[in-house]
Image 1 (tube, one colour):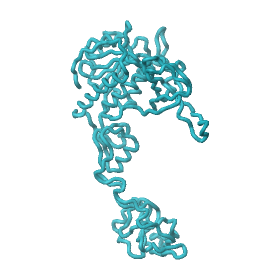
Image 2 (cartoon, one colour; image 1 turned 90 degrees about the vertical axis):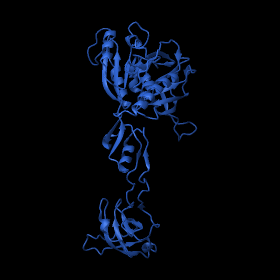
Image 3 (cartoon, helix red, strand yellow; image 1 turned 180 degrees about the vertical axis):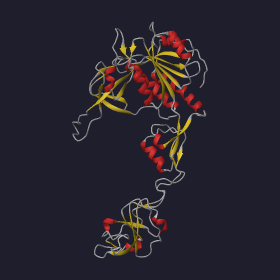
Image 4 (cartoon, rainbow, N blue to C red; image 1 turned 60 degrees about the horizontal axis):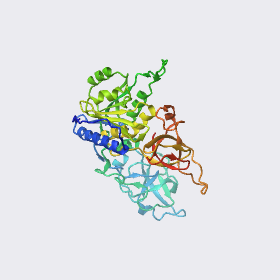
Length: 445
């Protein structure tokens, strides 16, 4: 990774959210380009292990889909010329000369259908030579089977489909060489299934970025234990760990760090190779904000105040070895919002993902809330049941949302995060969201 040093400085000026994000993404995308030539950037995984990974290289079909002409129906493979005159009053009788089941290679050795002959065929079975149409069993009397020695091996056809119907042609879905998936695609169940169909058993994927999460604060203690006066449960390390994994990264270490400069310096000195480090807490201007003081000594970390609520204090830069480092506020809601706005897009960009933003939709505010002037508010919200449109009782109104926390966007209100299913993004010029107003929402799982 690059290790160019730059003289960044702390500033009290509020900078736009978009400007800070642009700087972060520019730096991380440079790292992604550097990773593209690294020998350990790519690994090959089985399809069974590919879901949730990012493709390192584009994938083309190496197998046609379907790989052979096959039947789309249970019925009889026939020559259309034989059955075209068939009517319910004057059915056509054919001799059943073969049975073809899905997965069977029986058509390979079968003689081509001759005049007046039919082959019983199951859905997915290869179409025998000589046949050009499949008659669904519903259009016949069911016929006899070749395996049934007592059957007459005859089938009566009461009506004929159009010429060529009910046959899936080889390659009509994919031909060999067709582009199936582009590099940078996030693999899900549908993409993995398509790769299997196209003849692949493994895929080349981007190695997961290795990320360390550090929650700082002498007040933090192990969740579930007895609390001493002035101490609080450490939820930030758990929150960060889950968010890092959700972003498709390998969480290599989770650290709970007290406000101790000596300990922090020693820990940084012993830090092994990784692709990013994310701190929470200690990035503002308080007397015990040790992350700011220690990282400022490097001269490669910028401490800024972003025009955002919650999560105004932010830090971004590089450690001494060039590793990208993020510094987020310490309050849990601010951690969640800051990660969503800045860190998650960066980690996706590091994986080569072309789209690094969450899906957005427009929703109606079910309740009103205040928003600070001059700051982009990112409000945790939950979706509520939409009401019917009064003018169109048969149609639902747009999705409705309400603040997920009782106190609004307060950065300490972590209890309400559990109810959040999105973040409403309120522009800087809006000071009040009224019930019925339309807001843009980042949708989270």
